[in-house]
Amino acid sequence: MKLSRKTVIVLASLVVLGIVLVILNYVAENKLSKALDSVLVEAGASYEDLDVNLLGRSVELKEVKLKRAGKTIEVSSIQVDDIGVIEYLRTGNIEIEELLINDLRFLVDNGKKDTVASKPSGEKSKFKENISIEKLRLQNAEVRMIRNDSADKLYSKFSIFELQKVKIDSNTIKTAVPFEYEQYKFQNDSLFFEINDLHTLSVESINAENGHFEVVALKMLPRYSKAEHQQHIPYEKDRYDFSLPNIQLKNLTWSFKNDTLHLFNPYTEINRFNLKIYRDKLQPDDPRQKPLYSEVIRNLPIKIAFDSIVLQEGYILYEERTQTSRPPGSVDFGNFDATIYNFTNIGMEKPDFPKTEIDVQTRLFERAPLNVHWEFDISDAADRFQISGNMADIASAQINEFLKPAMNVTASGSIEDLDFNFSGNDDSGSGDMQLSYNDFKVEVLKRDGSEKNGFLSAIANLVIDNTTSEDKKYNDVQVTRDKKKSFWNYLWLFIRNGAIKTLI
Image 1 (tube, helix red, strand yellow):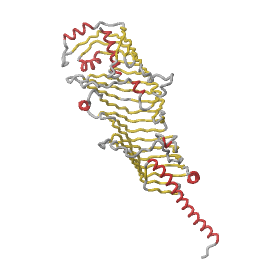
Image 2 (cartoon, helix red, strand yellow):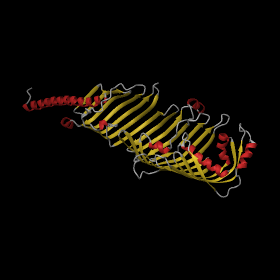
Image 3 (cartoon, rainbow, N blue to C red):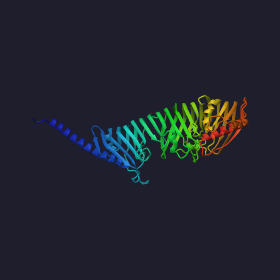
Image 4 (tube, helix red, strand yellow):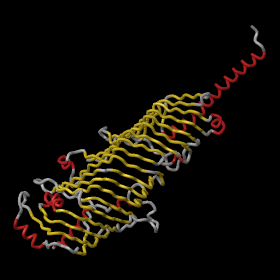
């Protein structure tokens, strides 16, 4: 059958078009391969297979691997959809509608040293492309950091990680985070981190989207029992058991400036935390100097600006053991609510840099109401602070929960009201304390704590003015700080010295 001239032209056109598409696909594949090679070589990575589909405007990379400096990244596949082919052939810029990364595994091996020579600081990056991605999505990603013994120091798993409007160019590729983006969303299904040889941190899940973070079931747990803990420390080190069901960060943003991470958040909410601290005073004293909190925050390796942090319905238990023959003394704080304002170390050089303020409302021994206001200037190299508060209705039964096991002393009577206002710096402090009490007496126990030591008790009550105090007593208090102990020991010295001056 003889074909018509028109049919022949159509068939010939289709053949030519097919040839053109094959050629364009070949050109695109080669050009894309060179561009991808440029990106991957710049990062020190490789891949096994590249599939370019011009008609479908898609690219798929398989088995991408990067290994250097004890770090390994492995990806089963990278799918690129809706590539701007014409724009790419015309300008060399890469425009992508969606980039999907499947089964990413990021491993950091602390036991391996960097065997890759670093690029000289003066050498210019060979990366010339401009890449824009409308949506970047990771599915089923894992991050692991292992120790020398191959045990996990960190493990984290993400079911979804999405970035919107991603941009990569010759400028962003040089920064700590080598890309820019406008929006993000991720779901972290588990997180484990070995803080040190004594404690671990775990999180059940983290859900985040464009500044809103929710952290669920965060726990910092001790690795050892109280008895075992003492066998793994050279001197006094607190044993912490901490949990909280929920943290809310309402509008968290971050950036890198000179390779330093900056975090900003106007409002943080922490609900129903539970903190237990155990200290064994039978251990040798820690010889290291303890900085005050203002110095700690000032010298953090990251920069932070949290306008307000609200803690609600917390509980704190402190236990201290001073004798092997007695159980630890304990002090607890129930219904713990606090608000922290201006928690920041950004802009410390400014003359109007704000003071950090902390307001606390709680109940000592879950009964006696305690209110505290504490403020300090993080930018102040002298670490000046001011702390004031009021505590009322403290019965001897509650006081003895700490005095008897910790100090081998019991008390009777009650403290009706206590007001304090102290100020100081890293070296010393002074202030006032007002105390009213009712028939307050002490009993010094024998060494085994089983009965009263009559002689010592009599001596103690001779020097204590144990009559009913209807009017509050006012005393100037002077304290020299022991820099090998914490701020809380500093505060305790204020309270103790004030109580001694009032009672004697």
